[in-house]
Amino acid sequence: MKKKVAVIMGSDSDLPLMEQAVSMLKNLQIPCEVHIYSAHRTPDAAADFASHARENGFGVILAGAGKAAHLAGALAARTTLPVIGVPIRSSTLDGLDALLSTVQMPSGMPVATVAIDGAANAALLAAQMLAIEDTELMARLEQMRREQTEKVLEKDRALQA
Image: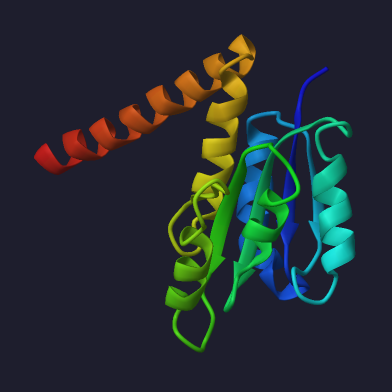
């Protein structure tokens, strides 16, 4: 069975950004589920989801949150699956608070962290993790890279003309 990716966000206000991850996963034909769980407002539900994620067919968890951004760490504390944190920009400190909250995990509790508002890269990192054991997905990622390369080279040719 193909592993799914969980796309978790702390609030529905994070959905417009996290939809970039969902779109990327769908483009790569990776099944995903999207949920709203808060590390602070629904800690038991978040912990329950993470505790059962592996047995429910997930291979990676993406966790997007702003401000205090404890969601990724709270999920990582309940699973040995890879967790990728997506710090989300807020009006308060322009996302720096979320970045620092996500990246500064204690020893023994890793959370991979992408750039502020880096939901698409989080999806790509999840895809690369899953592609370690999925050669079809690896081929789709390699094709995407070739297409990216060609687009840049086309722009260079246009510039040179």
